[in-house]
Every structure is written in C-alpha cells, then in structure tokens.
Image (cartoon, rainbow, N blue to C red; front, top):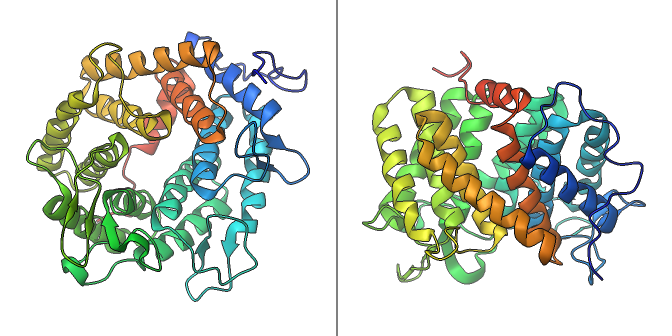
Length: 366
C-alpha cells in the first residue's frame, strides 16, 4: 500500500494567515496530512505502529509523533491543536499512575508495569515543555514535571552516578540516550519550576555523561555496562545531538561561555556522521532528525550558516525520499515530519518568534 500525497478534505484547509509559504512548510504539511490519514486511529486518538501493524505505537514513537504535532500546531493551530490535545489525553493509557513514582510504560498498561524506559520518558518531558511554551496549558507543564521526576529516579551511585536505561536495569547499562535528554529536560523545566534544583541536576548529569561516555573526538558512545564498565562504542547521531542541546541549555542558563564553546566543538565533530555521497546523516530518521534539531539550535545560538546548510540538506533529502519511497513505520514518518516543520520554523515569522522566546531564560533561574 503506497502512501497517498493528498490528504482527506478535512485536513489542511485551515492555514494560519500569519504563516509565510515555504517549500519546507508545504512539505511538512503534506507529510503530516498523510500521517493523519494513514496512521491516526480515530476511535482512540492514538497512532498505529506502521502500515502493516495497526496496534497502537510504542512510547518512543509516540514521543516523536507528539513532537511533530507540536510543531504542526505552531503553524496551523486550528487544524492540529485538537489532535495534539486529544493525543496527549490518549497517552494516559500508557501512564502508570499506580507505580511508586509514576511514569510512562512503553505500551498501554493497567498499572504497576515495571517496564519503563527512562529515555522514553525523557523525550516526553522535552516535547511536553515545547507544548507548554506553545499553549501555556498547565497540563503540559504538570505532566512534564511529573515525568521528569520519574526520569531522575533512574539515577544512582553505581558507576559514580548516571541514569539507567531501563527501570529494572535491562541490559545492565547506563546510556547516553538516558542521560543527555534528561539534562535537556531538566533545563526546559527549570525555566518554570525548581530552577536551581533542576539546573544542578542538568550540570550533574552532563558532567557524568562527559566523564563516562564522551570520546576524544567529541562524539558520544552509546552506553556503559555497569557490571564491568565496558563501553558500548557505537555512536548514534541522537546521542551527540542531545549533548549539544544540553551544552546550549547550560550556556543560556548560566552565561558560561565554556558550554557554548564545547557545543560548537561537538557540533563541528558531527560532520563525521555525514555520508560523503548523500551529504546527509547516516542514521535512520528516528535518530538523525534529532541531530538536525541540534544543528538548528546551534545555528540560532551562533549564526553559523554551515549548520543551517547541513540541516537543510538533510530535510531536502528526507522529503525527496518520502515522495519516492515513504517508510512504513510511524516513527520514521513522524521523524521526517518533525524535521520538516523545524526547518519551516527557520523560514517563517511564527517559527522564528517561537524559538526566540523558547530559547530565552526567564528570571526564575538564578
């Protein structure tokens, strides 16, 4: 079954009059409309895993899809804000309120599931805070705060600190993907709640991740096994991406330019992820879209046009591939949509103004 490029008549007809037309904006709209047509489960408000698997998506994919909807609602609130709010409510099926420290299970749960992944929850902290920045709906801030508390409960003194990947220590490892987004989440929540406490957590998590998982080239390994300290030396785009964003968040919160300098060094090292033939990032979109987001974050901080060029090239290639050979999995579709909406942000007044405010540091931080 091939994805159709045209959306159902009910979608895409209401465009925010303040939006400025752009190629990325049109591409983002087309991909998102297609997702709504082919993956949205009307009766539940959730999304299917793929074209072939119609069960509700797992929480990692839900986080990516929610981030795509947040970005879509920024540009077309009349169309996408209702989907955003309903999806948020629908994900309560995954929320384990019976656990001692509540958090999101990877699949719908009746409670006390004990199968939670810390990174799954951290992606939601970040995207819920973006939803709060957009809507000022306190539900998003409250749930981000609750979810962050679960994420931080994964920290212990083994290996001198760090957050586990899984609450029951599946695979026995502490991973960059369970620490870098936690630091970013702390910094996003710190803008509105528990500023000093969350800032201190962000510093602590970042310092541990650098000490245990950063290679000499600036990029980050995937994990460290707690039992013997052995490193899993695979380097994924999204791991380094979130550390770039953690550095930028610490710089904005503290004014310490050493964090900005390190963000720039690590951002430059990310050229190692570029496929020399395609000039795009080598990983699948579910990983690499987060490095595009980091490139755009670093571009906003530095004005380095090479970062914008690199991000745009990845978006152009993703759009080209989507038109000729669209992926079947929701998480890949949502990652492409998110990437395209973020690139549209750079070309529109709505997007630029949103990120100017979202990057700012309120007086709640010391």
